[in-house]
Image (cartoon, rainbow, N blue to C red):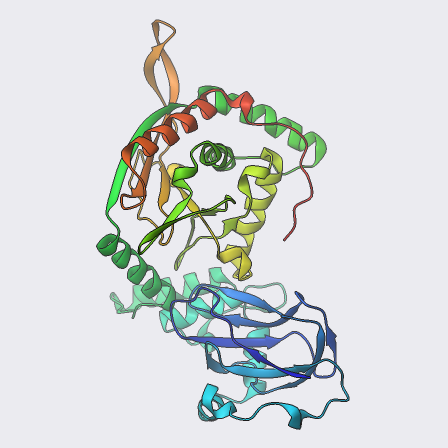
Length: 399
């Protein structure tokens, strides 16, 4: 039987993506869940997996083409003997004619392949957003490829020469603008804050760093520690792990936490799946891998979707506190400021302690103030008594 291969939504705000590269050649067998091709959305460059076992019969779209979501880009079959004529008619209805027109407007495929070899996906995306011609950018990569730093340097030189630049909104910036505007307009935000004594937590992280170095594990950071605490606090306050949906509230059994990662061109929110089941070292390895994927534009569709709650940490930039915008359809986002040493009451005396402000914003349609208070108190107790946060050895984590 013949099966159509279509462009999935992938969480993209826009309707078009760029098909970057086919990872399987026609005639090759591919297993379900294996990478089939790569696309660049308005958020990142991601791999699209095969939806079933089978043979790739043919590709209908060449690398570099701009295609719409749900467009048929190729065909698979159970065996190589099946005739392609067995596929149902009507491909025009899903945009094949449009693809042909778009392909005629694009540069030659050979030129596109050459440019892709000489630049990273992130560099290409940044160049497009800044209106830079890659031919004018001096490469610094070990193999002659253009990297992110080359784009940043060239953009800075251009700005110095002309004094002013007008840059249209990039797809990522446009997606962020639309999402935050819609969230503020449609979601009634309610915030609550708590000050947390992080002195003991910082001491525990030093011990954890020593254990990590000794065993070649990923060393946990404050972000990893608060993710762990947030996951366990969500387990104790399931009324926050929800979504408002019209006439009903959806309660999630699983805890998938989105982690806001800032990039030069905007931000991404990759997801730590089943965060409450991961110990501190395993969580550190997971966040390190997600951060690297975000910086190189190599996150998969699974890694960018499915969050039930989000954490945003700006403490590393010295910000004392802030309120974050909820990422719909989630009902809550936790914003963390910097842990700073300052005088505080301690065991009946005045002492220098490391204090951090955490601010929780919730969708008031689904979550009430008492739930905010319960979560923040549980979160504070966990961080102020960090031995509760397990220090057992890391386990293998799945992609």
